[in-house]
Length: 389
Image (cartoon, rainbow, N blue to C red):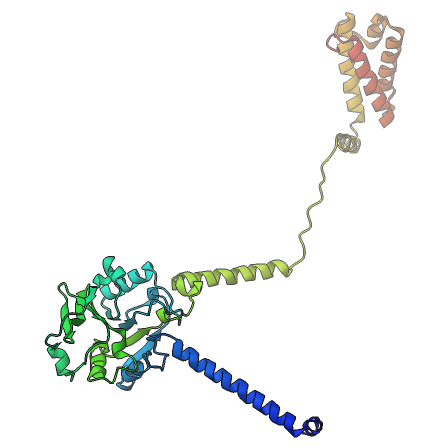
């Protein structure tokens, strides 16, 4: 408060009055603009509209009579058997608030009526009649005055006077039952469509807030819109008047599919969580232990050494090499090493042969002697054995 007082202390009285007048002018302009827009707006035939062209009074009339009434704000594909009667008021073609219906919407309404639904249609659509949608009748100019006709069932409901409808059109009948002829031609028709019924009213203004109190139109509205079964729902289609609730994919897909998809998503999240959180020690790849040829030779040497097989290996190598060389130099298989050495003409070859036999007969079975003797045997085989080359 002290801060406000300090601010106002520096403002003169004329300035304060000027500010107040400016605020009042802005408020007045806003109210006038809103009123003008409401006055210029065309009749909406919506249950949310409380002006003369709205259906708010129609909605509250049914509600006051204990009828379960609601606003339908989805595509007709969501209509189910819980809705007994659908009130569909055709919007004006130049109303910018309307949401145009599609052919699929018309087919969905047809399917719902065929299953047993009751459609109360207000207005006319000759294009839909030409397409034979819902077997709607065509409109025709009203005729000269003639006797008023009110169906006996409506008279029993207290409908004695409905007045003259404001529309310049009437229905062109072709087998439909006439419920009301206001003296200018058929104004209300009814006929069966599949297991359901369609009731058509040529004029949307008959039950708007301005005309609902004319004559017995309130009783007429109650008689036409009342559900055919106990606790049935009467729904006003508000989608075409701009009150549309968008559908989401989880509302459209079948419920079992949505449940299965939810379970799959939960399983995927659990799998991702398990992959990101370590539940045990990491798996270490086993080290490769491939062996090379040198490893094989080392292992074989170690095996022979443990088994003390050097003498046997050396003796077998020298004996086999001596026999092969003997056949190569023309000596017999029973020739002694000395006889084989005499037949070797090459001085170096003879020396190598004698060294090989010496290593086998000396008894010095060291690894180096074994390797030396085997190397000499291999070399002499290649030089003197008949199959050495």
